[in-house]
Image (cartoon, rainbow, N blue to C red; front, side, top):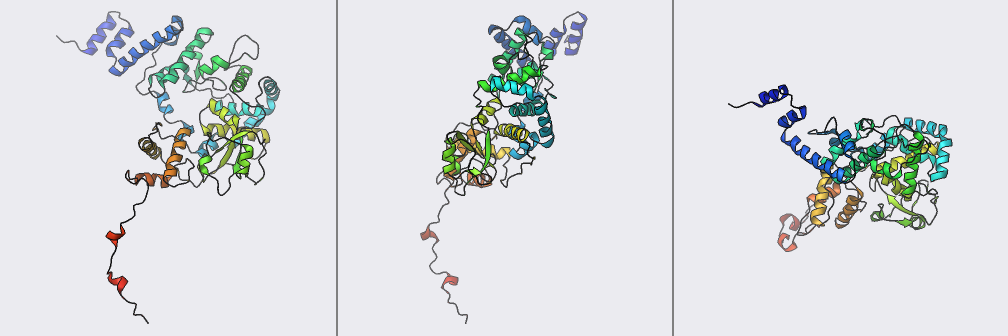
Length: 439
């Protein structure tokens, strides 16, 4: 006689079998595959030095399985890459945040100034990071770090990166008294006032208040000093700003834009780069800088320095780095806020950008990700296509470029075919040969 799954499960429960055994029977194929992967992951972590007790604590109540994890959905639609530059900047840099930032700047200035003496990071930048990351400590995130990092490690998009962060998070549990239930953070596993990734915590976090423990959640002194220690270690230059908005000359060669194209301030000045009011750049001539066009040739232009690239090591988004720089400026200078206006440039849809990336990979032989995101590598490759298509090479795709790609002919490239005059010549066109008899 056949025993149904429900009956078998019920009999196991009555016989005193564990709920784990019961769950294994009703487990769907996808969950079973995940469980096998998780078992291998736990073994790998133990082999790397994580204790069995930490593994047991981290996965005591759940294995964090979900068929469609929320963190994976969020990873696919990060605001830094989905919104236009003006939309993103106005979301991060707005009057309320600027007002709160100035209040915190004044209130905590004694602490910030001491941290600056130790690590060389100006207070306005620490306040800007704090405001952008957790709205000044009011929102650390509500995701369990171990759960998020486990699910993101299983996802194939950035598995290697998140698996390393998971190892670092388990290492924190192994070496401190924090319990997994208290280790909360963002969807990506970032933690505390300044949203440190676990690897950043282990490498740079400091005990600034001297209580013999590092607490980036409840000790603002530890959190702020840790952020400063990190920025200092990765190359922050105390004497330099992040950058400045500039005006471009009418004949600017847009192929020179982008963070890879470095020139000295003196060289940029010689090429006609000026402040918005057409003055000489208020920067040292020997400093290295790049021209950034977040919306292409029709939008705003910025001259960015070393510290802009340092901000991008914190978060690999040009829009994020711009937001931190602009917010810091507003906090320090007290100038009146103005929203960033959308440029006349037409923004392509994600699917259109993906199509252009696929074209680049096929025709040029590049190997960029076909993800619909305008990262630095994609923009540099777009410049090559724009040059081929005889368009201004600013790295910003528009519908003119998309139209040329749609009409691309492998035999003649982007060229417009010229009709054969011999085939199209009309010797005796009646209208052309008729004399004009109008008096």
